[in-house]
Length: 397
Ligand code: GDP
Ligand code: MN
Image (tube, rainbow, N blue to C red):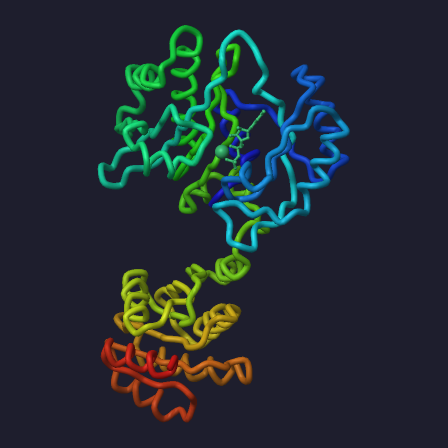
């Protein structure tokens, strides 16, 4: 589950990570109030107004702007809230902005230069360890840095059994070229960031930029946080941060009926039991010249009710031209699934507009094929994987 920048910063702050302070606002009036409050608390007269959407690269798309007085706060907030923000990380249509973060300007002049670093904490599945990735090249596209100057990205692996060790935090501060106050600040920053990552059950914490201010403080200016969905049951305070407006509407509905669904760009809807078979089925569709419209794992129960729910979810995607059902009957009997498909199809009435290819293998597969073939519906059966692919190809032609 992805979070907004302001939510990620709230979590960081709760673990003692220094952050660029800010207040979230739903409209220009609230933005002005937020700016006044920040001025009272921090003394800053300048503010950055930051679009809150689940996508990075907001600065490039015009979603992050500096306001030098309250009038500009109002103007910029009016301009950003309601806009369709297009960034390198959104689709071509962009994302609608519902709220902004009004933050203190932390790029003020002072004794020393400001510097922007990159830092993230992620799980390295290959080594089974957590990994801190960091770079002196912060503020910009890290993908670009990785491509053109990969030697400027460092990694530090952390054994979850021992946790982050003191020397590792010092090594990071050293590699970032810091000394004195900034060095000490960075070791504290790294330790608190790592603690936040572990104790919030996150998949990812990405802070770009981490800022060294002109008075040598180290703080998070941005925060991209993703919490492990499987841990949300024990992290109620984070589960409540979910913003459904930011998520794919069909995926949200699918989750409500307990279906494991991921929306994709293609034209062939898939209904499969088991994630592995679903992946193989998507490959099959591609080999047949189609593109999967979704990933859908219906799980262990594939009765009429569930098949119908799955049909309805799949058909919400207007690009779907055919549906391929690929079910392996191990515990669930194929004839029951076949009957479920037939019943669901009938219940759908006129809303079922696309051809269906069903491949059922496993217990009572022959009986299942008979049920499908004798149904009198526009449902084709297939026994072999290749046969299913050929039939998909034929209906797409
Ligand atoms: P992103 O573009 O979605 O990654 O959003 P960020 O939160 O990283 O902000 C984009 C850029 O805005 C940063 O890289 C900074 O250069 C700039 N920025 C952020 N906060 C401030 C600030 O307080 N003052 C100034 N002048 N610039 C800021
Ligand atoms: Mn950023």
